[in-house]
Length: 154
Image (cartoon, rainbow, N blue to C red; front, side, top):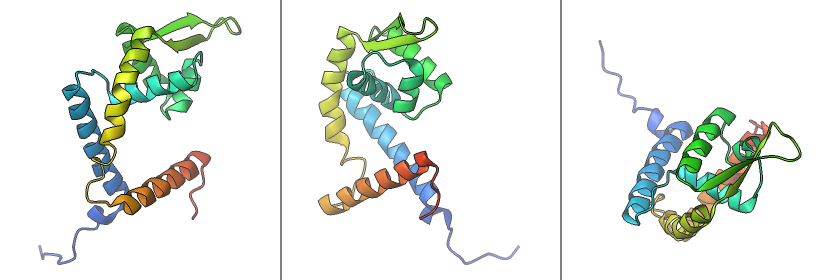
């Protein structure tokens, strides 16, 4: 079989680059929180942050707030409840729904995690200066918002 001298295209494709940056982000997040003595995953942090901003939302609302499916957020919520970080009560408006709120332990761990997570943000995008970092964040936010709205055109 003849060798194809063209360079690989995947390393220049957005999907591949996003996956690689996600790997970096997850690794750095885990390392920094572990070093701080905090036992949270990125999705658990996002869930606690969403519950801080929207106390009393149900699991469907939490799933939407953190862009995860209901099944995934159900498992996340179960683990957070087992850790004593959230409370789940039956909604008075809809007896089938469970309202979620941060426990006192949840508020404390979120307060401890926030500065660590804030500090690691530049670390997950190494090699970018401040202007490039700001541009990357703005473009990523724009693309994410368009994707959530279903807009796949430029």
